[in-house]
Amino acid sequence: MHSKSTYGTIAVKTAVLLIAALLLFAPFLFQDVRALEVAARICIFIVLVASYDLLIGYTGIVSFAHTMFFGFGAYGAAIALRQMGPGWDAVAIGALAGVLVSLVVATGVGLLSLRVKAIFFAMITLATASVALVLASQLSQFTGGEDGITYRVPDLFKPATKLMVDETGKVARLFGVKLNGKLAAYYFVFFTSLALFLLMLRVVAAPLGSVLKAIRENEARAEAIGYRVVAYRTFVFCLSAAVASLAGTIYAVWLKYTGPDTTLSFAIMIDILLMVVIGGMGTMWGAVVGAVLMVMAQYYLRDLMGAAAETTANIPLLPDLLDPDRWLFWLGIIFILLVYFFPRGITGTIMQKGARL
Image (cartoon, rainbow, N blue to C red; front, top):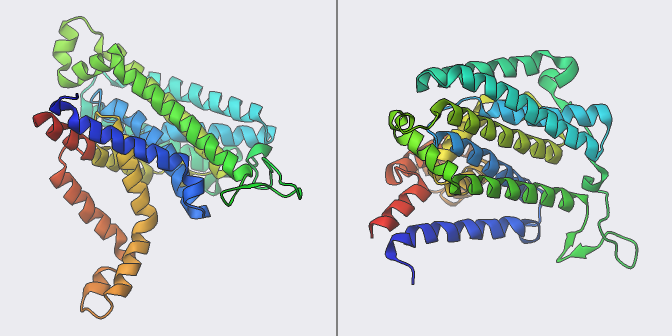
């Protein structure tokens, strides 16, 4: 029988498993193009947010360069696919190039900057990310500039590809869903994202996770008992950068387009920060909850507000307040309420309250 101190953790893990099951069967449960786009984006952002949680939640490193590494992976795949054609070799070389560039930059920034105070490191990463964004816009012969790059992906992921055919020679269906390249592309996103997330779970469950928490709680004490704090911080910064780069490659393959707004934008960095805070820092499970809530709000809050405005059309003031154009205002209100009622994030607060029973 489980002790009461584990009830919060059990509740969080149950919710995460339910989300995983919904994402696994999303193409069959939600049979429209938009829903599949939302599910794929959730999968990718879970990985991106979890890799950032390794930094801010487990090690106490505040970085504003996470989207830069995400962009390196996306642009690596995009440039390789455009130059080499739609083959798996291009995807592999692009992913490898993105990871290598991310590791070189992360190592350089980490070794030069992680010795300084947190706020100075944050500013250095912000400056580095800004340089990457400017270079992506100006090196148009490689990156496509502001217009970005469009390219073809491996034939397996083309919507016209038939994974299975029926007796008439048409693409087969399973529960009404076409077994075509779009379905293959989604499951490529799902399973690669799942593998990366499980890898990060393994990292934080290993002794390394305890060392990172010790550094976060008291850097001087960790240094005093023999841990090389700068080396550990640089290592986790590089690991986080590599995972973010791979997430960028996955996103590039899914989207078939890579540009500054889709991978390097500072708005994406703000989204990642919000997802970490909403879900709960230093839990890893919080990445799942935060990514799901934030992406769902970005895609469906306007629709929900539009329906609410129509329903309350005869009530004074309410339709104006619920105008879909004010969705960002309401998203801000919801965020403030979540921070107030869940100060450690949703998963962090639930796990903490479960431990107090």
